[in-house]
Length: 323
Image 1 (cartoon, rainbow, N blue to C red):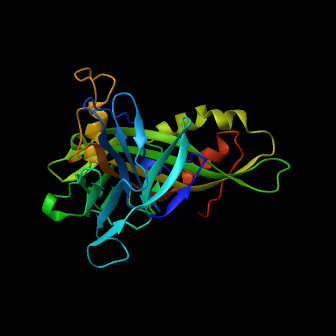
Image 2: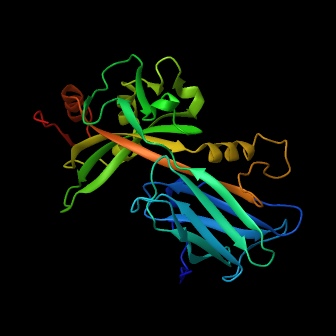
Image 3: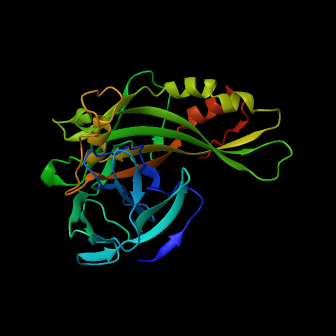
């Protein structure tokens, strides 16, 4: 395995879908595995340690062999790769992460194998990446408006007809972003900025419409203007002469895999029925391998809404009637 040393802790560790985790066992050294796979990630990371109640240590370079198998984007048959390693400092301790730059596919099953040389034990897990899904409402590249005080829905569904468009998800989070470009007085370069609008989140099965076979969440369009009015950045950073231009409005769905959802439930502060985490999908070890995914659509804000943004708020937004 190729070994790289990385001293600075970076956000690439466990990609963008990372979650806080604490895993311990009471009966001696045990292999602990943690990973959240993401199809769109350039690199997918795996944390593999041996741990008891009192400490957590990385395996030495020659103590284990780590394999990852499945159908990758650059191939047409099942392939098995040996994971590379990268080292990082955390809390004064040098830890080792395992990784692959092989591109994953949506809705594919992958096998993870750790062979412990000292005792011949194989630690394993299977995980399926989040399947392909599409937006139903709003359709990509369509106009979006915020005039109504009545509830509207954001809708999406999986592409697999055999599962009635269900998605192998445990949890959904829906967020929108009001994107714009900004040019401050005296500045020569524009800056890209966004206002985040969290629509909501919920367990996947609670968001599924069983009659029409799609997932949905309700929102009130006019809430956008209330948020725009209260946005702290715009309120405090809109001097005379500032110029801002509207960009595409983004609707984003973040998907948490079932394994990660159940792991988080088992470790939630309100769950006091265990002394240590009691959820694992690792054979001959403990921990969790799951998957996550995100998907976005982009939309032009409807003309009257664009005009209102420019004329009713002293934020310097430019109104272009020709969009």
